[in-house]
Structures are given as structure tokens and as C-alpha cells.
Length: 299
Image (cartoon, rainbow, N blue to C red; front, top):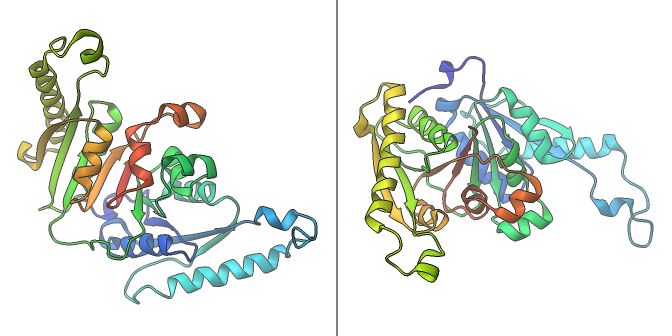
């Protein structure tokens, strides 16, 4: 496992806070990882809601002064940090005016990690309404951890189960490399590759059109090559990574595996904007309703 001192050019964890249960979950998760990633660097962004610009009687008719809004945000940020135990290292909160996703991404450029909470809106609603977690996943320059908002998060323990989605891409190999570098020494790291018969095969050609054994063997070869490559690069034994293949859509395979995992690690996809909305991706599907903390690693 690497520690914070191994990367002097990057420092600590930027954590988005806003007083919600979702941000508290992110803060609680980060509080148990400071020995590994460095101190918490809390960031609270604020902006005027659209309604303040509406004329009366539909809105207030005038926006509160900037100084008043900034002071309220500062007070809210301090209240969030007051919930942390005294022995958790952290910086004074950063309070900025602006879009939360943009502020967090910019602030995290020199961080070890960016951590945000999510309320789990689901992919359609999050795409239409907008989502801080979604923006961060698309644009983060450093590994991002999205923490689900739930009553009982699994705390950092001596032995963790880390599941990594592997599809042979450079992004997924970067995710696997990050997982090995940052996992506790006795953590179980499982590299999982999903495979399935092309959807038009049975419909147009019959079930024997594709060689199922060949598809399964190709998936196994792919996950083995990815794991072997990472182990060789990092100088760790090949037994450090468990290799697994599963038949089915990668989204549902990884979602199922994440139910019993302490951390799910995915590669960041390069698509953003309209193509990303219509085409979708495994990463997009999994970050909106995570069962466990989910890391998105830039390629």
C-alpha cells in the first residue's frame, strides 16, 4: 500500500461538503483514510438558486448580498467539519462561489484523491437534472471516489475486498494499477471481466453462430494479460490479483459484485456531453446508484 508521503507533489483528499447526508457520508469515508491519502481538504461551494432571479411574486425580487451568502456558506462548512473526530487531520474549509462540480474538479488538481457523496438519483434523472458526481466523474484529473449515502458504510478495515472492472482498455488497466498501488497489503483484489454473446447472434444466425468457448477463453486471456501486466509493472506477485470472468452485461455483473465489496474501481471513460448521454457506458451506469464506494480512475 502506498502512503501519502510517496507522492509529495499531490496532497490530501479534496472532499465536497454541503451539509447533506450524502456529503457527510463522503466526509466519514475520507476520515478513515487520512493515513493513506493525507489530510482532508474540505470544499464547500455555493451559488444562487435560479428562483432568486425571478420577479415577485414568483421570487424574492432581489438576491441576498454576496457577503451574506458567503458568510452563511462558511458557517455551514464549519458546522460540517465540527462533526469530525478531533484526531482526524484536515485543513480549514475552502468556501467558493460557483458550480460545485467545477469548483471541486479545479481544487482537486493537486490532490491525491477527490471524494464526493451521491444521493443515487439514477442515470436518466442525473443526466437531465445534473449531478455533481457525474460532472466530477467526467472531468476529474485525479482518482475520484463516489460514496453512497446510506445508514451504515463499511469502515476502513484490516482486510478489504476490492473489485476492479477490466475490459482490456488502457483506462481499465490504469484502474487496476491504482487499486493495487493503494490497497492494504492484505486486501483481496479481484479483477473481473464480463463477456456476452453479441446481441444479434442468436436472433439472426442461431445460437451456434458464435463459439461460446472461444468467447469465454478470450475474456479469460484478456483479464489474465491485464493482471499480469500490472503485477509486472509494480513488482508484485501474480497471486496479488484474483482473476475472474462472468457472462453477462458488464454493468450488471459489476453491480452484483459490488454488493459484497468494500470498494469498486472503474476506469474513467473519455466520452462526455451528448454522445455520453445517448451511448452510455459501464462507468456511467455504475456511479449513479452505487452499492459501495466507487472509485473512477483517469486513464
